[in-house]
Amino acid sequence: EPEVTQTPSHQVTQMGQEVILRCVPISNHLYFYWYRQILGQKVEFLVSFYNNEISEKSEIFDDQFSVERPDGSNFTLKIRSTKLEDSAMYFCASSDKRELSQYFGPGTRLTVL
Amino acid sequence: KNEVEQSPQNLTAQEGEFITINCSYSVGISALHWLQQHPGGGIVSLFMLSSGKKKHGRLIATINIQEKHSSLHITASHPRDSAVYICAVLYNTDKLIFGTGTRLQVFP
Image (cartoon, chains in turn orange, blue):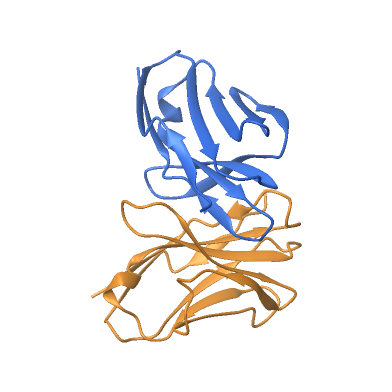
């Protein structure tokens, strides 16, 4: 069964460093999403992406964040200058149509020291 | 404000019990998701529904649009059902709003 994959599974970085989290969505999917979950808290929407542009973003997704689909298969989330509060599990998801189920990747645990 | 509330927050059950987890939301939605999150953190989509009822194996999800309420039922619960169950709603946007989750533990 096709699945969403994410790399790395765990990323440790120093505050102020740039990180890129990578996702490979399911191949025929058109809608892509990033979510984050701070330890002990609920999952939060960050951004949705369709047709090579951001379709919606949350207030969390400020200028420090960017997303890209560089090569038609990968979908990346970049954090330019990480803060301690960026430490969280980041989930990528994709769907075939907006009104259909989203398939989630296994997550990347980001630890900012 | 668009809120999603789940109850109970924590639930323990003996193997074989019938389990119900509830989800309420505040305004009209276009769809509701039930998700399962295992201790390792991974999230699996169980159901997406906008009306009526769906069944998959021992899992049943129902939604009442008028009452803005959904339930997830697990029949003949098993220890491997132990996980956090999350309700998430989609309004007329791309933004899923998540509940805080219900932690279920099923003991043998």
